[in-house]
Image (cartoon, rainbow, N blue to C red; front, side, top):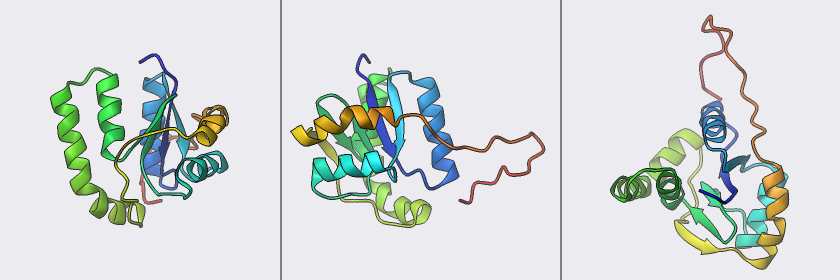
Length: 150
């Protein structure tokens, strides 16, 4: 994947910060930004005229939301179309219950790919500049602090 994409994720939970950190460290072409950051919130306002709580992948031309985010990441990084399509369908079925359970809130009913608005495109450099600063406390190997409740 040639473009420099931004993955917007829920940064409130340690588990998701750890997953985002893994994505950011393994995929040089993807920057990760917490949904709660000012840059992400401004971008969402510009793109959707709202701040939908959603898992998003932003590239130079489009915003991919929900299951499409996972499918796009998988396809762009070598997974087959069949696997990506299955993951996308599964995400659609699991997003509501998993959102309530793991995030404590219902994800926005937003799935698919959307052209970037001009206003959102103008904020993309700032959003990219926020990428990959993920606070995750490292374990010292004794198991202390390894739980992921918050």
